[in-house]
Image 1 (cartoon, rainbow, N blue to C red):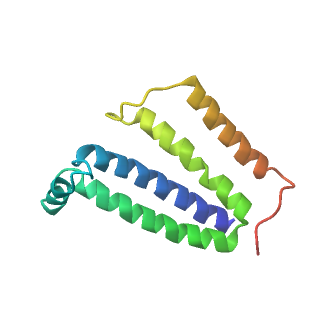
Image 2: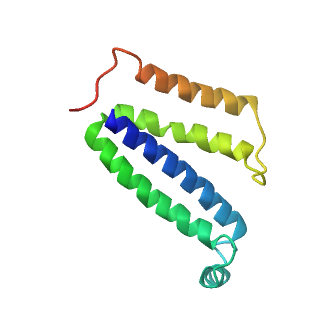
Length: 130
């Protein structure tokens, strides 16, 4: 059970990190304009904090992922990791300013992911590592 909790913690952290990095990349100058990008970072322009927090979120997520993999079978851990698609898709639709639009095709894809996770975690599936 602790492996599942660590994996879910990793999923939440990586999802938030992705959203923060998206915000940073939209707010900051393009990376291919290296000088402008570096000046924006040095002067702590809007988006710099989101970039730093997003990168720290990825690092924290990897720590949780490491702990999850010690306690959970890889097939189950990766099934849980796919839930980040659901979280990021939903948040992109709901967050103001994200300019994402709902699509039935996207909903069907998210539904397939959720169905796959449920199948993998169905009773009788392989148990956690001890």
